[in-house]
Length: 365
Image (cartoon, rainbow, N blue to C red; front, side, top):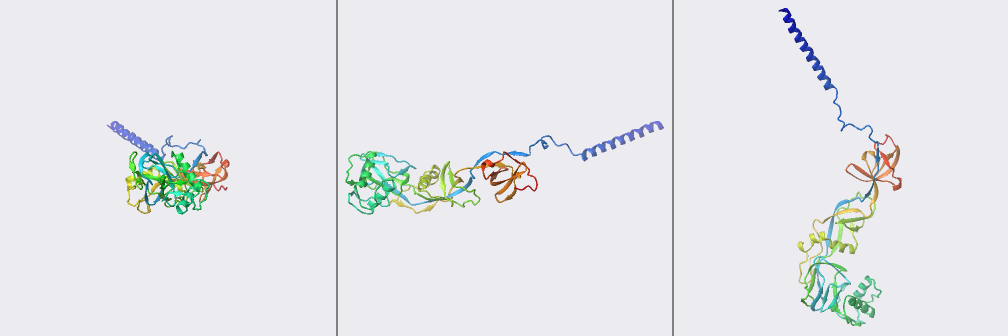
């Protein structure tokens, strides 16, 4: 009996020892931190250098453009007859010193003058209309005197241009009103075309409704944190030079802007532009609601290098330093994105091959 009891007590003791040993092992497992997975462990051989890569930096920023337009107008023929040639379509640019319509086999010359031609002119005639034609010829590059008195050279220049376009038997003493179609600007955009090839047309009858001219385009709320340099706005890969205030100032660029497909799609005939008016002019200068989206960027990209943000030190505004093998180098911070800072060096050839990822403490430059 006693032997049986001793065996039971021995088994109980052994179980206790096993439980104590298990508890000690479990406690030890909790006390010792688990091993770091190899994928998360820091590579002791990881380089402390960051190799620089050159970038073309445009400093591009999303902006909105405010677009202002002038009054709508009609383009009318000066003479009557049958339309024997026609070159007009919605959104087409019509230019001075070119022809888009022929009547009775003779081309009609587009001419942009401050005063429309309202009469036939002969040598010796004088007036504001004569001076306006002479001024326009000077704009086109011809050497004439804008004195308001019609001379032989003015008639000859206009008639020679008509002959280049296909006219025949021009009178060397006459500048015929029926062969001159007045444009309100050197270049205009047709919102719709009213004439038809092979159809009769009467003097004063419209050839086209003109899209209201774009008179001003400017960036809304010009960004203040821009890199120095000339700027352009880019729309669908078309670029327009802007001044320091963000305005497109070139008349030719305003015409190009008005002919952009994205502009015509949102502000052309489908949006109500091109409706005829009884007096040839309708509406008043307006600004388009909502404006247009564009990219404001440097006209010429600058050379920049991407560095880790942590490699910059002694940061003061857009000035900072990077370290090359413990030697401080001054840089200008040009921008940042996706965990990278873009910097420029005073001279691009001074750019080091790499920078220290973690600059030394109290390093100067």
